[in-house]
Image (cartoon, rainbow, N blue to C red; front, side, top):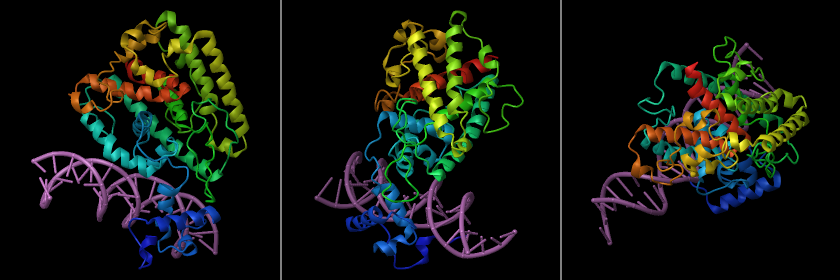
Amino acid sequence: MVKSQCREKVGLKKGPWTPEEDQKLLAYIEEHGHGSWRALPAKAGLQRCGKSCRLRWTNYLRPDIKRGKFNLQEEQSIIQLHALLGNRWSAIATHLPKRTDNEIKNYWNTHLKKRLDKMGIDPVTHKPKADSFGSGSGHSKGAANLSHMAQWESARLEAEARLVRESKLIVPNPPKNLLGSAASAPLVSNEGSTAAPTARPQCLDVLKAWQGVVFSMFSVGRSDSLESPTSTLNFSENALAIPLNGAHKQYSTTRIAFATNNAACIGGTTASEFDRGNRLGCIEKLEETARVKRDLDSSMGIHDIIPYASDHNAWFADSPANIENAPGGDIIGLSEILGSNSQEHNPFCSGENINESYDGNLEENRDYWNSLLNLVGASPTGSAVFLIIYTIATRIVPLL
DNA sequence: AAAGGCTCCAACCGCGCATGA
DNA sequence: CTCATGCGCGGTTGGAGCCTT
């Protein structure tokens, strides 16, 4: 085993950094980039090991770091991403602009984990501790498949993230609003330099993971459905055969078609395609996707299908009655499927009331899952896609 | 006011992976 | 193929500050 760098030399300083040390490190990196971390301390005149310098830079000094309290949306993102990715903090951090993996990890351990625990939800599995919510063989099977595919997608996500890091690719002026947030997580240049934030390619996002899960759930029962973590775009006819409430089938089918269209880029563009210089093509696909989405929005009213899809906070802010009464609000029996969206016990919407009111019943668990659903609403396209994924995964598939 | 407990988070440690000689 | 090296990741720790008794 390789010795820890910091243990090789005695006499190197440890512990908290002083402002003088910070200044030295900052000044050196701004002028020269970090280059080899191992060689940096000597060049910068620091009595620290390279590893310590790297940590200080990446977790504290980097200019593109946002510090301070996590907002509601960030909290929800962390929970959702943790449910999908587990303790892969670096992967989670790539989806939270300007937050470091260390900061997210700390926040999870000190706040969110405890909060979920108090809700009666296992912070590791993200399932209710008593598992009453997921009882029943059908649902368990669907959940197992979802979990299985999440693992595959997770692995793929990680590999693609690595590829992207290595490719150092930069997409100049990424098209805005295609996937919700053009100013997504920056990549810190491996070159060190001044580490100006660069745009992360939008095609490699957690949405792709959702898309992967969509595919997996639509392919439940197919022997080939779990073969490859890179499986994409093989939408089966099953996707359109899922029983939907008659009159609304057209809308829902169209919505799924949109998801498929979205997948054409999000899921269908692999990291290797990026590496083959297909980035512009990907952007074109995204633009096309955005155009199709706009068309759909204007012609059929996307928000009729997925109420408040573009305003994820409004999802919970509104009353169940309003959702029921919203035009098309009963599309695919959404309100029936999800149950009432009671806000009063929702810990994510009601601030700190979790400590006051939680008694471990199903209501809170449902709200928790609704919160997870809601989270993806941070991305207007992702919300709708995920909503359908989740609805099918948890409510429809078990009935098949 | 003081002591003890608790919370939070920056920093450290150990491990595994990638890469190059 | 093997080994040394560098780096990144996730888990853990230490201590400062806050809270409670």
